[in-house]
Image (cartoon, helix red, strand yellow):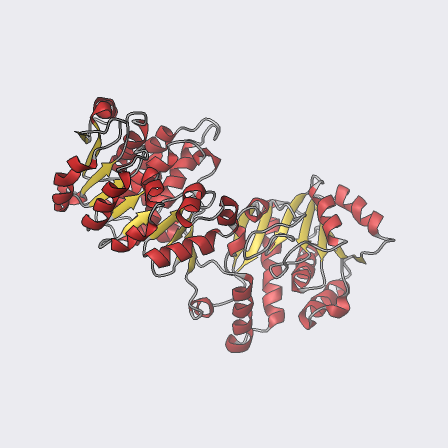
Length: 514
């Protein structure tokens, strides 16, 4: 499903009106009908509803909602905040239709302010039709004060298209934003609905059709997508009854150090759970027995190590030389940072031509010379969290978090890698400039070892020779879904090993949805 900006949505509206021939007043009617329908699905007609309408087109949508809820028997009151003389013709049309239908409409001023605030305390549902997708920056008064008061009430809060105060493009919130329980957005989801802090104001998101045909969006060349199970399920290969372990590839994982045996263990478990036919893990000899005891299904190779307990990469030459044996390689989990680490990583980057996943300390070593990525022959996937991304590009974490899509796209296209920028709603950027946002996962993933599980999943799926983009998207989506499943009964207590145990259930859900 495409993700759009406010500007792209405006262009889609324009094309629909001018090129398809659907009048703007009809689009507004359709929008309001859909919001009213979503409210009726959730609350019976005995509810008291307050519509907060601005003078823009979002307010016009609110007038339509009020009329249709009134027609359905709801007790609806509309408050207009703004000057209707500044409104579009279609907004005026729907305002007049509401008035002619004899449903109560009041205008906000200093005399009616007390009445509005009293009404907010008494109502069951507050509908935000104040600003919509085009607004940026701090909401002006009196809207800021009204939002603040509405948020403190016990009413169910519904936002039309976008909660007022949330930037549709960046998710930025300055001062105040409407804290929605439900956001009903039109035609396609908006980028800012999945970027924090704005994403935390959305509540449940419902994407509804208002009669904008798909040809409008597909003609615009948008390369930004929201991952959905409906699309990804077709990317997961069906396993044939007459297959064998060789059918599903051989994953090679390199990592671990004397003090960090857990990370390569988790990655190895995850690669196997993701379906790799064979998985080999190379770790220092000092932790070989520990890892093998946890993952007896894997081939565990104990490598010579340095005096500090890190891998001695000179002993990996035979493995790299036999690269045809391995269909994907993942490096980094628990590996640590040491003087010879970068030279060893350089050798793997330049020598291994299959799909390569670099994570954790592999990225920390790479940050010393990111240009090594340009030596790659085969496809490369990197999975930085914001701290690792900060080291890779030499900018503050705060900058990374404020500009996640731009940072991911710029690095991916410059260095021709698939980049998974981890975090709430992880971002995937591709070498050719596509951007994907992942909606699965939650705070249960904020735990040590979660990233190692993702590395293992990526290496495991890539080992099966699934197309690289499909393998990356499936891994990220299913990793988050496994987190959702593992978060019961509490996302406080979820461990990385719980994610591994839920990988099969996540894959099962996707298969069942076919």
